[in-house]
Length: 271
Length: 339
Image 1 (tube, each protein chain N blue to C red):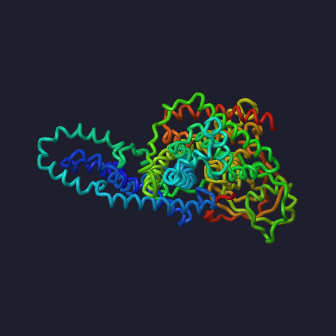
Image 2: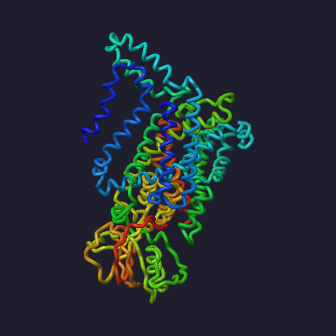
Image 3: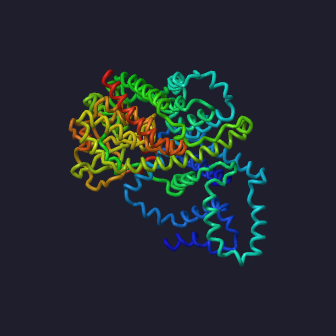
Protein backbone atom coordinates (compact mmCIF):
# COMPACT_ATOMS: atom_id res chain seq x y z
CA UNK A 1 0.00 0.00 0.00
CA UNK A 2 1.53 3.23 -1.13
CA UNK A 3 1.96 6.32 0.95
CA UNK A 4 -0.39 8.40 -1.20
CA UNK A 5 -3.01 5.65 -1.07
CA UNK A 6 -2.75 5.65 2.70
CA UNK A 7 -3.19 9.40 2.69
CA UNK A 8 -6.31 9.19 0.50
CA UNK A 9 -7.69 6.50 2.80
CA UNK A 10 -7.12 8.64 5.89
CA UNK A 11 -8.70 11.59 4.13
CA UNK A 12 -11.77 9.45 3.50
CA UNK A 13 -11.94 8.16 7.09
CA UNK A 14 -11.38 11.62 8.59
CA UNK A 15 -13.93 13.14 6.24
CA UNK A 16 -16.43 10.45 7.22
CA UNK A 17 -16.00 11.25 10.91
CA UNK A 18 -16.56 14.95 10.22
CA UNK A 19 -19.55 14.23 8.00
CA UNK A 20 -21.42 12.18 10.61
CA UNK A 21 -20.48 14.76 13.25
CA UNK A 22 -21.80 17.76 11.33
CA UNK A 23 -24.84 15.91 9.95
CA UNK A 24 -25.70 14.83 13.50
CA UNK A 25 -26.10 11.18 12.51
CA UNK A 26 -23.31 10.17 14.90
CA UNK A 27 -25.89 9.94 17.72
CA UNK A 28 -27.13 6.72 16.11
CA UNK A 29 -23.82 5.09 16.92
CA UNK A 30 -22.27 6.72 19.99
CA UNK A 31 -23.31 8.85 22.93
CA UNK A 32 -23.59 12.59 22.17
CA UNK A 33 -20.70 13.40 24.53
CA UNK A 34 -18.21 11.90 22.08
CA UNK A 35 -18.73 14.75 19.59
CA UNK A 36 -15.62 16.80 20.53
CA UNK A 37 -13.40 13.74 20.23
CA UNK A 38 -14.94 12.82 16.88
CA UNK A 39 -14.25 16.31 15.55
CA UNK A 40 -10.67 16.29 16.84
CA UNK A 41 -10.04 12.85 15.36
CA UNK A 42 -11.56 13.88 12.03
CA UNK A 43 -9.42 17.00 11.75
CA UNK A 44 -6.27 15.16 12.89
CA UNK A 45 -6.77 12.46 10.25
CA UNK A 46 -7.23 15.09 7.55
CA UNK A 47 -4.11 16.89 8.76
CA UNK A 48 -2.10 13.64 8.69
CA UNK A 49 -3.42 12.94 5.18
CA UNK A 50 -2.58 16.48 4.05
CA UNK A 51 0.97 16.35 5.38
CA UNK A 52 1.54 12.92 3.83
CA UNK A 53 0.24 14.08 0.46
CA UNK A 54 2.43 17.16 0.52
CA UNK A 55 5.43 14.95 1.38
CA UNK A 56 4.60 12.74 -1.58
CA UNK A 57 4.36 15.74 -3.87
CA UNK A 58 7.60 17.30 -2.66
CA UNK A 59 9.59 14.07 -2.93
CA UNK A 60 10.00 13.35 -6.65
CA UNK A 61 11.02 9.74 -6.01
CA UNK A 62 7.67 9.02 -4.45
CA UNK A 63 5.73 10.28 -7.46
CA UNK A 64 5.28 7.46 -9.94
CA UNK A 65 3.69 9.49 -12.73
CA UNK A 66 6.77 10.88 -14.45
CA UNK A 67 9.01 7.84 -14.18
CA UNK A 68 6.23 5.43 -14.89
CA UNK A 69 5.22 7.06 -18.16
CA UNK A 70 8.81 6.79 -19.39
CA UNK A 71 8.77 3.13 -18.52
CA UNK A 72 5.48 2.80 -20.23
CA UNK A 73 6.68 4.42 -23.40
CA UNK A 74 9.80 2.26 -23.68
CA UNK A 75 7.82 -0.82 -22.85
CA UNK A 76 5.16 -0.10 -25.43
CA UNK A 77 7.82 -0.02 -28.10
CA UNK A 78 8.66 -3.70 -27.70
CA UNK A 79 5.23 -4.68 -26.48
CA UNK A 80 4.77 -7.43 -29.02
CA UNK A 81 7.28 -9.92 -27.71
CA UNK A 82 6.46 -9.58 -24.08
CA UNK A 83 2.85 -10.70 -23.88
CA UNK A 84 3.75 -14.18 -22.69
CA UNK A 85 5.80 -12.86 -19.81
CA UNK A 86 3.07 -10.73 -18.43
CA UNK A 87 1.33 -13.31 -16.28
CA UNK A 88 4.47 -14.11 -14.33
CA UNK A 89 5.43 -10.45 -14.12
CA UNK A 90 2.04 -9.62 -12.74
CA UNK A 91 2.35 -12.30 -10.06
CA UNK A 92 5.72 -10.85 -9.06
CA UNK A 93 4.34 -7.37 -8.89
CA UNK A 94 1.46 -8.52 -6.70
CA UNK A 95 3.80 -10.32 -4.37
CA UNK A 96 5.99 -7.26 -4.01
CA UNK A 97 3.00 -5.05 -3.37
CA UNK A 98 2.99 -5.88 0.32
CA UNK A 99 6.25 -4.06 0.96
CA UNK A 100 6.41 -1.51 -1.81
CA UNK A 101 6.09 1.35 0.65
CA UNK A 102 8.31 4.37 0.72
CA UNK A 103 10.43 3.27 3.68
CA UNK A 104 11.30 -0.20 2.47
CA UNK A 105 9.59 -1.77 5.49
CA UNK A 106 6.30 -3.56 5.35
CA UNK A 107 3.35 -1.28 4.76
CA UNK A 108 -0.01 -2.33 6.10
CA UNK A 109 -2.22 -3.83 3.42
CA UNK A 110 -4.84 -4.62 6.04
CA UNK A 111 -5.50 -0.87 6.12
CA UNK A 112 -7.71 -1.23 3.05
CA UNK A 113 -10.36 -2.66 5.34
CA UNK A 114 -10.89 0.85 6.66
CA UNK A 115 -12.83 1.45 3.45
CA UNK A 116 -15.65 -0.77 4.72
CA UNK A 117 -16.84 1.30 7.70
CA UNK A 118 -16.18 4.59 5.88
CA UNK A 119 -18.25 3.60 2.85
CA UNK A 120 -20.93 2.01 5.02
CA UNK A 121 -21.31 5.29 6.90
CA UNK A 122 -21.15 7.53 3.84
CA UNK A 123 -23.39 5.51 1.53
CA UNK A 124 -25.76 3.55 3.76
CA UNK A 125 -25.93 5.64 6.93
CA UNK A 126 -26.99 2.60 9.02
CA UNK A 127 -30.09 3.30 11.15
CA UNK A 128 -30.21 3.46 14.93
CA UNK A 129 -30.89 0.18 16.72
CA UNK A 130 -34.56 -0.71 16.96
CA UNK A 131 -36.97 -3.47 17.87
CA UNK A 132 -34.79 -6.36 16.69
CA UNK A 133 -32.04 -5.70 19.23
CA UNK A 134 -34.53 -4.58 21.91
CA UNK A 135 -36.55 -7.79 21.69
CA UNK A 136 -33.50 -10.04 21.82
CA UNK A 137 -32.15 -8.49 25.00
CA UNK A 138 -33.63 -8.41 28.47
CA UNK A 139 -34.78 -5.10 29.90
CA UNK A 140 -31.83 -3.43 31.61
CA UNK A 141 -33.61 -1.72 34.46
CA UNK A 142 -31.51 -3.35 37.18
CA UNK A 143 -28.36 -1.68 35.81
CA UNK A 144 -29.93 1.65 36.72
CA UNK A 145 -30.87 1.04 40.36
CA UNK A 146 -31.74 4.30 42.02
CA UNK A 147 -33.31 5.00 45.39
CA UNK A 148 -33.33 8.74 45.47
CA UNK A 149 -36.13 10.23 43.38
CA UNK A 150 -36.69 13.96 43.12
CA UNK A 151 -40.31 15.03 42.60
CA UNK A 152 -41.41 15.02 38.96
CA UNK A 153 -40.90 18.30 37.11
CA UNK A 154 -43.92 20.49 36.34
CA UNK A 155 -46.15 19.79 33.38
CA UNK A 156 -49.45 18.10 32.67
CA UNK A 157 -48.81 15.68 31.19
CA UNK A 158 -45.17 15.70 32.27
CA UNK A 159 -42.75 14.52 29.60
CA UNK A 160 -40.23 12.07 31.10
CA UNK A 161 -37.90 9.44 29.69
CA UNK A 162 -38.89 5.79 29.52
CA UNK A 163 -35.97 4.99 31.81
CA UNK A 164 -37.13 7.58 34.36
CA UNK A 165 -40.69 6.25 34.30
CA UNK A 166 -39.58 2.63 34.66
CA UNK A 167 -37.18 3.37 37.54
CA UNK A 168 -39.79 5.38 39.42
CA UNK A 169 -42.41 2.72 38.82
CA UNK A 170 -40.19 -0.13 40.04
CA UNK A 171 -37.72 1.27 42.58
CA UNK A 172 -40.03 3.97 44.00
CA UNK A 173 -43.15 1.76 43.75
CA UNK A 174 -44.72 4.58 41.75
CA UNK A 175 -44.86 6.96 44.74
CA UNK A 176 -43.36 9.94 42.89
CA UNK A 177 -45.68 9.21 39.92
CA UNK A 178 -48.90 9.21 41.95
CA UNK A 179 -51.67 11.43 40.60
CA UNK A 180 -49.64 12.63 37.61
CA UNK A 181 -50.19 12.23 33.90
CA UNK A 182 -46.97 11.31 32.07
CA UNK A 183 -45.91 11.45 28.43
CA UNK A 184 -43.42 8.82 27.23
CA UNK A 185 -41.96 8.37 23.78
CA UNK A 186 -40.27 5.29 22.35
CA UNK A 187 -40.68 2.59 19.73
CA UNK A 188 -42.94 -0.44 19.67
CA UNK A 189 -41.67 -3.96 20.18
CA UNK A 190 -43.71 -7.16 20.28
CA UNK A 191 -44.04 -8.56 23.80
CA UNK A 192 -43.94 -12.30 24.58
CA UNK A 193 -47.63 -12.81 23.70
CA UNK A 194 -47.55 -10.45 20.74
CA UNK A 195 -48.95 -7.49 22.68
CA UNK A 196 -47.06 -4.24 22.10
CA UNK A 197 -44.47 -2.95 24.57
CA UNK A 198 -42.96 0.51 24.57
CA UNK A 199 -39.14 0.36 24.45
CA UNK A 200 -36.21 2.70 24.40
CA UNK A 201 -32.51 1.88 24.09
CA UNK A 202 -30.04 3.23 26.64
CA UNK A 203 -26.45 3.69 25.54
CA UNK A 204 -23.47 4.43 27.78
CA UNK A 205 -20.73 4.50 25.18
CA UNK A 206 -21.69 3.15 21.77
CA UNK A 207 -24.48 1.11 20.22
CA UNK A 208 -22.54 -2.09 20.98
CA UNK A 209 -23.49 -1.64 24.63
CA UNK A 210 -27.10 -0.59 23.92
CA UNK A 211 -29.66 -2.20 26.24
CA UNK A 212 -33.43 -1.82 26.11
CA UNK A 213 -35.76 -0.47 28.79
CA UNK A 214 -39.23 -1.93 28.28
CA UNK A 215 -42.58 -0.67 29.55
CA UNK A 216 -45.85 -2.54 29.08
CA UNK A 217 -49.00 -0.80 27.81
CA UNK A 218 -52.15 -1.38 29.91
CA UNK A 219 -55.65 -0.35 28.89
CA UNK A 220 -56.87 0.65 25.45
CA UNK A 221 -54.03 0.20 22.99
CA UNK A 222 -54.59 0.81 19.28
CA UNK A 223 -54.50 -2.55 17.47
CA UNK A 224 -52.40 -1.33 14.56
CA UNK A 225 -49.06 -0.81 16.35
CA UNK A 226 -46.23 -2.50 14.47
CA UNK A 227 -42.66 -3.04 15.74
CA UNK A 228 -40.28 -0.12 15.21
CA UNK A 229 -43.13 2.41 14.94
CA UNK A 230 -42.32 5.39 17.17
CA UNK A 231 -45.17 6.40 19.47
CA UNK A 232 -45.97 8.92 22.14
CA UNK A 233 -47.92 7.52 25.06
CA UNK A 234 -49.94 9.62 27.46
CA UNK A 235 -50.90 7.80 30.61
CA UNK A 236 -50.52 7.27 34.31
CA UNK A 237 -48.91 4.86 36.77
CA UNK A 238 -50.31 1.40 37.28
CA UNK A 239 -48.89 -1.24 39.60
CA UNK A 240 -49.23 -3.95 36.98
CA UNK A 241 -45.88 -5.54 35.99
CA UNK A 242 -44.47 -8.37 33.91
CA UNK A 243 -41.23 -10.32 33.99
CA UNK A 244 -39.04 -10.14 30.90
CA UNK A 245 -38.76 -13.73 29.66
CA UNK A 246 -35.17 -13.06 28.55
CA UNK A 247 -33.67 -12.16 31.93
CA UNK A 248 -36.50 -12.30 34.49
CA UNK A 249 -36.17 -8.57 35.13
CA UNK A 250 -39.26 -6.46 35.93
CA UNK A 251 -41.22 -4.72 33.16
CA UNK A 252 -43.51 -2.06 34.66
CA UNK A 253 -46.70 -0.97 32.89
CA UNK A 254 -48.23 2.38 32.13
CA UNK A 255 -52.03 2.89 32.09
CA UNK A 256 -52.63 4.27 28.60
CA UNK A 257 -54.90 7.26 28.02
CA UNK A 258 -53.81 8.09 24.47
CA UNK A 259 -51.29 6.85 21.90
CA UNK A 260 -50.02 8.93 19.00
CA UNK A 261 -47.63 7.79 16.28
CA UNK A 262 -44.68 10.13 15.80
CA UNK A 263 -41.61 10.37 13.59
CA UNK A 264 -38.42 8.88 15.05
CA UNK A 265 -36.55 11.58 16.98
CA UNK A 266 -33.00 12.60 16.11
CA UNK A 267 -31.63 11.23 19.36
CA UNK A 268 -33.11 7.79 19.66
CA UNK A 269 -31.10 6.59 22.65
CA UNK A 270 -31.41 7.57 26.26
CA UNK A 271 -28.39 7.44 28.54
CA UNK B 1 -26.80 -5.73 -10.70
CA UNK B 2 -24.31 -8.43 -11.55
CA UNK B 3 -23.92 -6.71 -14.89
CA UNK B 4 -23.30 -3.35 -13.29
CA UNK B 5 -21.08 -4.96 -10.75
CA UNK B 6 -18.67 -6.78 -12.99
CA UNK B 7 -18.40 -4.29 -15.79
CA UNK B 8 -16.24 -1.68 -14.07
CA UNK B 9 -14.01 -4.42 -12.65
CA UNK B 10 -13.44 -6.17 -15.94
CA UNK B 11 -12.90 -3.07 -17.98
CA UNK B 12 -9.41 -2.17 -16.73
CA UNK B 13 -7.76 -5.50 -17.69
CA UNK B 14 -9.22 -5.12 -21.18
CA UNK B 15 -7.64 -1.71 -21.56
CA UNK B 16 -4.50 -2.49 -19.63
CA UNK B 17 -2.51 -5.14 -21.55
CA UNK B 18 -0.35 -2.54 -23.32
CA UNK B 19 0.83 -1.31 -19.93
CA UNK B 20 4.00 -2.71 -18.44
CA UNK B 21 3.20 -5.31 -15.79
CA UNK B 22 5.39 -3.58 -13.24
CA UNK B 23 2.91 -0.74 -13.25
CA UNK B 24 -0.03 -2.95 -12.48
CA UNK B 25 1.12 -3.54 -8.92
CA UNK B 26 2.22 0.07 -8.49
CA UNK B 27 -0.90 1.66 -9.82
CA UNK B 28 -3.22 -0.70 -7.98
CA UNK B 29 -4.16 1.06 -4.80
CA UNK B 30 -5.60 4.40 -5.76
CA UNK B 31 -7.29 3.09 -8.90
CA UNK B 32 -8.84 0.16 -7.10
CA UNK B 33 -10.10 2.60 -4.49
CA UNK B 34 -11.80 4.69 -7.17
CA UNK B 35 -13.29 1.63 -8.89
CA UNK B 36 -14.68 0.30 -5.59
CA UNK B 37 -16.34 3.62 -4.84
CA UNK B 38 -17.88 3.75 -8.33
CA UNK B 39 -19.21 0.19 -8.04
CA UNK B 40 -20.76 0.88 -4.68
CA UNK B 41 -22.30 4.14 -5.87
CA UNK B 42 -23.83 2.38 -8.88
CA UNK B 43 -25.01 -0.64 -6.93
CA UNK B 44 -26.16 1.23 -3.87
CA UNK B 45 -29.87 0.57 -4.28
CA UNK B 46 -29.31 -3.11 -4.91
CA UNK B 47 -26.97 -3.45 -1.94
CA UNK B 48 -29.48 -1.66 0.29
CA UNK B 49 -32.26 -4.03 -0.75
CA UNK B 50 -29.96 -6.94 0.14
CA UNK B 51 -29.76 -5.89 3.76
CA UNK B 52 -33.43 -5.72 4.52
CA UNK B 53 -33.13 -8.31 7.25
CA UNK B 54 -33.20 -6.63 10.66
CA UNK B 55 -30.35 -8.82 11.87
CA UNK B 56 -28.08 -7.66 9.05
CA UNK B 57 -29.01 -4.03 9.67
CA UNK B 58 -28.35 -4.43 13.39
CA UNK B 59 -25.01 -6.06 12.62
CA UNK B 60 -23.96 -3.15 10.40
CA UNK B 61 -25.06 -0.56 12.95
CA UNK B 62 -23.20 -2.28 15.78
CA UNK B 63 -20.12 -2.68 13.58
CA UNK B 64 -19.91 0.98 12.54
CA UNK B 65 -20.71 2.01 16.12
CA UNK B 66 -17.69 0.15 17.45
CA UNK B 67 -15.56 1.79 14.74
CA UNK B 68 -16.92 5.30 15.40
CA UNK B 69 -16.44 4.83 19.13
CA UNK B 70 -12.92 3.42 18.85
CA UNK B 71 -11.43 5.61 16.11
CA UNK B 72 -11.02 8.82 18.16
CA UNK B 73 -9.22 6.90 20.90
CA UNK B 74 -7.14 5.06 18.33
CA UNK B 75 -6.16 8.37 16.70
CA UNK B 76 -5.27 9.97 20.03
CA UNK B 77 -3.34 6.89 21.15
CA UNK B 78 -1.48 6.87 17.85
CA UNK B 79 -0.60 10.55 18.16
CA UNK B 80 0.70 9.97 21.68
CA UNK B 81 2.68 6.98 20.44
CA UNK B 82 4.06 8.96 17.51
CA UNK B 83 5.00 11.79 19.87
CA UNK B 84 6.83 9.33 22.13
CA UNK B 85 8.67 7.96 19.11
CA UNK B 86 9.57 11.33 17.66
CA UNK B 87 10.12 13.64 20.62
CA UNK B 88 10.73 11.85 23.93
CA UNK B 89 14.43 11.11 24.46
CA UNK B 90 15.36 7.56 25.44
CA UNK B 91 16.99 8.98 28.56
CA UNK B 92 13.54 9.84 29.88
CA UNK B 93 12.45 6.20 30.12
CA UNK B 94 15.81 5.12 31.53
CA UNK B 95 15.27 7.57 34.39
CA UNK B 96 11.55 7.05 34.88
CA UNK B 97 11.62 3.27 35.11
CA UNK B 98 13.77 1.09 37.39
CA UNK B 99 16.57 -0.51 35.41
CA UNK B 100 15.73 -4.03 36.64
CA UNK B 101 12.84 -5.24 34.46
CA UNK B 102 11.28 -7.15 37.37
CA UNK B 103 10.98 -3.86 39.25
CA UNK B 104 9.96 -1.89 36.17
CA UNK B 105 6.89 -4.11 35.60
CA UNK B 106 4.81 -2.92 38.60
CA UNK B 107 5.91 0.69 38.08
CA UNK B 108 4.75 0.56 34.45
CA UNK B 109 1.50 -1.08 35.53
CA UNK B 110 0.70 1.70 37.97
CA UNK B 111 1.76 4.28 35.37
CA UNK B 112 -1.06 2.93 33.20
CA UNK B 113 -3.45 4.90 35.41
CA UNK B 114 -2.32 8.18 33.84
CA UNK B 115 -3.48 7.38 30.30
CA UNK B 116 -7.20 8.17 30.28
CA UNK B 117 -8.10 6.09 27.24
CA UNK B 118 -9.68 2.75 26.51
CA UNK B 119 -7.82 -0.24 25.11
CA UNK B 120 -7.63 1.01 21.52
CA UNK B 121 -5.33 3.81 22.67
CA UNK B 122 -3.02 1.71 24.80
CA UNK B 123 -1.86 -0.72 22.08
CA UNK B 124 0.02 1.87 19.99
CA UNK B 125 1.46 3.48 23.11
CA UNK B 126 2.80 0.15 24.38
CA UNK B 127 4.29 -0.45 20.93
CA UNK B 128 6.04 2.91 21.03
CA UNK B 129 7.41 2.19 24.51
CA UNK B 130 9.03 -1.04 23.29
CA UNK B 131 10.44 0.75 20.26
CA UNK B 132 12.02 3.27 22.61
CA UNK B 133 13.82 0.58 24.55
CA UNK B 134 11.42 -0.01 27.45
CA UNK B 135 11.53 -3.67 28.52
CA UNK B 136 8.66 -5.52 26.75
CA UNK B 137 7.52 -6.99 30.08
CA UNK B 138 7.01 -3.49 31.49
CA UNK B 139 5.32 -2.29 28.31
CA UNK B 140 2.88 -5.22 28.49
CA UNK B 141 2.04 -4.47 32.12
CA UNK B 142 1.25 -0.93 30.98
CA UNK B 143 -0.78 -2.23 28.01
CA UNK B 144 -2.96 -4.47 30.20
CA UNK B 145 -3.37 -2.20 33.21
CA UNK B 146 -3.99 1.14 31.56
CA UNK B 147 -7.46 0.57 30.02
CA UNK B 148 -8.81 -0.84 33.28
CA UNK B 149 -7.36 1.33 36.04
CA UNK B 150 -7.43 4.84 34.61
CA UNK B 151 -9.67 7.36 36.41
CA UNK B 152 -12.25 7.64 33.62
CA UNK B 153 -12.93 3.91 33.71
CA UNK B 154 -12.96 3.72 37.52
CA UNK B 155 -15.46 6.59 37.74
CA UNK B 156 -17.68 4.89 35.16
CA UNK B 157 -17.51 1.73 37.26
CA UNK B 158 -18.51 3.63 40.40
CA UNK B 159 -21.48 5.16 38.56
CA UNK B 160 -22.61 1.80 37.21
CA UNK B 161 -22.44 0.11 40.62
CA UNK B 162 -23.99 2.67 42.96
CA UNK B 163 -23.70 1.71 46.62
CA UNK B 164 -21.05 -0.92 45.85
CA UNK B 165 -17.72 0.90 46.05
CA UNK B 166 -15.99 -2.44 46.66
CA UNK B 167 -16.55 -3.17 42.95
CA UNK B 168 -14.30 -0.24 42.02
CA UNK B 169 -11.63 -1.35 44.50
CA UNK B 170 -11.89 -4.95 43.32
CA UNK B 171 -11.60 -3.94 39.67
CA UNK B 172 -8.54 -1.79 40.34
CA UNK B 173 -6.82 -4.45 42.45
CA UNK B 174 -7.58 -7.40 40.19
CA UNK B 175 -6.68 -5.56 36.94
CA UNK B 176 -3.38 -4.23 38.28
CA UNK B 177 -2.48 -7.62 39.81
CA UNK B 178 -3.26 -9.48 36.58
CA UNK B 179 -1.25 -6.96 34.51
CA UNK B 180 1.79 -7.22 36.79
CA UNK B 181 1.60 -11.03 36.87
CA UNK B 182 1.51 -11.05 33.07
CA UNK B 183 4.56 -8.78 32.97
CA UNK B 184 6.50 -11.09 35.27
CA UNK B 185 5.34 -14.16 33.36
CA UNK B 186 6.71 -12.58 30.18
CA UNK B 187 10.06 -12.04 31.93
CA UNK B 188 10.25 -15.72 32.87
CA UNK B 189 8.69 -17.40 29.85
CA UNK B 190 8.53 -14.87 27.02
CA UNK B 191 10.71 -15.38 23.94
CA UNK B 192 11.80 -12.25 22.07
CA UNK B 193 11.36 -14.31 18.87
CA UNK B 194 7.57 -14.33 19.37
CA UNK B 195 7.44 -10.60 18.86
CA UNK B 196 7.30 -9.30 15.32
CA UNK B 197 10.61 -7.56 14.72
CA UNK B 198 9.96 -3.90 15.38
CA UNK B 199 11.41 -1.29 13.17
CA UNK B 200 14.63 -0.39 14.94
CA UNK B 201 14.60 3.08 16.36
CA UNK B 202 17.12 5.22 14.52
CA UNK B 203 18.05 8.32 16.54
CA UNK B 204 19.07 10.20 13.39
CA UNK B 205 16.03 9.79 11.15
CA UNK B 206 13.29 8.99 13.67
CA UNK B 207 13.30 12.46 15.12
CA UNK B 208 11.13 15.49 14.78
CA UNK B 209 8.03 16.29 12.77
CA UNK B 210 8.61 14.18 9.64
CA UNK B 211 8.92 11.08 11.82
CA UNK B 212 5.84 12.14 13.79
CA UNK B 213 3.62 12.48 10.73
CA UNK B 214 4.84 9.36 9.02
CA UNK B 215 4.41 7.32 12.19
CA UNK B 216 0.85 8.69 12.63
CA UNK B 217 -0.10 7.83 9.07
CA UNK B 218 1.34 4.35 9.10
CA UNK B 219 0.02 3.43 12.56
CA UNK B 220 -3.55 4.66 12.05
CA UNK B 221 -3.83 2.75 8.77
CA UNK B 222 -2.39 -0.43 10.23
CA UNK B 223 -4.22 -0.39 13.57
CA UNK B 224 -7.42 0.80 11.90
CA UNK B 225 -7.35 -2.15 9.51
CA UNK B 226 -7.01 -4.66 12.33
CA UNK B 227 -9.66 -2.80 14.31
CA UNK B 228 -12.07 -3.39 11.42
CA UNK B 229 -11.47 -7.14 11.66
CA UNK B 230 -12.03 -7.18 15.41
CA UNK B 231 -15.05 -4.87 15.31
CA UNK B 232 -16.73 -6.97 12.66
CA UNK B 233 -16.18 -10.19 14.60
CA UNK B 234 -17.49 -8.59 17.79
CA UNK B 235 -20.54 -7.13 16.04
CA UNK B 236 -21.34 -10.51 14.47
CA UNK B 237 -21.29 -12.21 17.84
CA UNK B 238 -23.19 -9.35 19.44
CA UNK B 239 -26.18 -9.96 17.18
CA UNK B 240 -25.98 -13.76 16.94
CA UNK B 241 -25.30 -15.10 20.45
CA UNK B 242 -28.74 -15.42 22.10
CA UNK B 243 -28.73 -13.68 25.49
CA UNK B 244 -30.88 -16.53 26.78
CA UNK B 245 -27.79 -18.79 26.71
CA UNK B 246 -26.33 -16.73 29.50
CA UNK B 247 -29.32 -17.48 31.70
CA UNK B 248 -28.55 -21.15 31.51
CA UNK B 249 -25.08 -20.77 33.06
CA UNK B 250 -25.79 -17.92 35.49
CA UNK B 251 -26.72 -20.24 38.34
CA UNK B 252 -23.50 -22.28 38.31
CA UNK B 253 -20.73 -20.42 40.19
CA UNK B 254 -17.85 -21.92 38.16
CA UNK B 255 -19.40 -21.75 34.70
CA UNK B 256 -20.76 -18.28 35.32
CA UNK B 257 -17.26 -16.84 35.90
CA UNK B 258 -15.89 -18.47 32.76
CA UNK B 259 -18.99 -17.56 30.76
CA UNK B 260 -18.80 -13.86 31.61
CA UNK B 261 -15.05 -13.87 30.92
CA UNK B 262 -15.74 -15.31 27.46
CA UNK B 263 -18.60 -12.88 26.94
CA UNK B 264 -16.21 -9.99 27.61
CA UNK B 265 -13.85 -11.39 24.96
CA UNK B 266 -16.63 -11.76 22.40
CA UNK B 267 -18.50 -8.50 22.94
CA UNK B 268 -15.35 -6.30 22.88
CA UNK B 269 -17.08 -3.43 24.62
CA UNK B 270 -15.04 -0.32 25.29
CA UNK B 271 -13.64 -0.34 28.83
CA UNK B 272 -15.38 2.94 29.53
CA UNK B 273 -18.78 1.32 28.99
CA UNK B 274 -18.35 -2.26 30.11
CA UNK B 275 -19.27 -1.54 33.73
CA UNK B 276 -22.80 -0.57 32.67
CA UNK B 277 -23.20 -3.80 30.78
CA UNK B 278 -21.81 -5.75 33.73
CA UNK B 279 -24.29 -4.04 36.03
CA UNK B 280 -27.18 -5.11 33.80
CA UNK B 281 -26.08 -8.77 34.03
CA UNK B 282 -27.74 -8.80 37.43
CA UNK B 283 -28.46 -12.52 37.46
CA UNK B 284 -24.73 -13.23 37.77
CA UNK B 285 -22.62 -13.19 40.94
CA UNK B 286 -20.43 -10.17 41.67
CA UNK B 287 -17.33 -12.32 41.16
CA UNK B 288 -18.49 -13.33 37.69
CA UNK B 289 -19.16 -9.70 36.82
CA UNK B 290 -15.72 -8.75 38.18
CA UNK B 291 -14.21 -11.31 35.78
CA UNK B 292 -16.12 -9.60 32.96
CA UNK B 293 -14.62 -6.23 33.96
CA UNK B 294 -11.07 -7.55 34.38
CA UNK B 295 -10.95 -9.68 31.23
CA UNK B 296 -12.66 -7.19 28.87
CA UNK B 297 -10.01 -4.46 28.77
CA UNK B 298 -7.18 -7.03 28.55
CA UNK B 299 -8.43 -9.61 26.05
CA UNK B 300 -11.12 -9.13 23.48
CA UNK B 301 -11.58 -9.71 19.78
CA UNK B 302 -10.69 -6.22 18.59
CA UNK B 303 -7.74 -6.05 20.98
CA UNK B 304 -6.52 -9.45 19.76
CA UNK B 305 -6.72 -8.28 16.16
CA UNK B 306 -4.77 -5.15 17.05
CA UNK B 307 -2.13 -7.15 18.95
CA UNK B 308 -1.69 -9.37 15.89
CA UNK B 309 -1.10 -6.23 13.86
CA UNK B 310 1.28 -4.62 16.30
CA UNK B 311 3.24 -7.44 17.89
CA UNK B 312 2.67 -10.27 15.41
CA UNK B 313 0.49 -13.41 15.38
CA UNK B 314 3.07 -15.59 17.16
CA UNK B 315 2.88 -13.21 20.08
CA UNK B 316 -0.88 -12.67 20.18
CA UNK B 317 -1.78 -16.36 19.98
CA UNK B 318 0.23 -17.02 23.16
CA UNK B 319 -0.28 -13.78 25.02
CA UNK B 320 -4.08 -13.42 24.76
CA UNK B 321 -5.10 -16.89 26.07
CA UNK B 322 -2.57 -16.68 28.91
CA UNK B 323 -3.90 -13.25 29.84
CA UNK B 324 -7.43 -14.67 29.83
CA UNK B 325 -6.53 -17.46 32.27
CA UNK B 326 -4.56 -15.12 34.55
CA UNK B 327 -7.33 -12.50 34.54
CA UNK B 328 -10.05 -15.04 35.40
CA UNK B 329 -7.98 -16.61 38.20
CA UNK B 330 -7.08 -13.24 39.70
CA UNK B 331 -10.74 -12.14 39.52
CA UNK B 332 -11.84 -15.26 41.39
CA UNK B 333 -9.18 -14.70 44.06
CA UNK B 334 -9.99 -11.00 44.50
CA UNK B 335 -13.74 -11.69 44.43
CA UNK B 336 -13.33 -14.36 47.09
CA UNK B 337 -11.39 -11.92 49.30
CA UNK B 338 -13.56 -8.83 48.81
CA UNK B 339 -17.17 -9.85 48.23
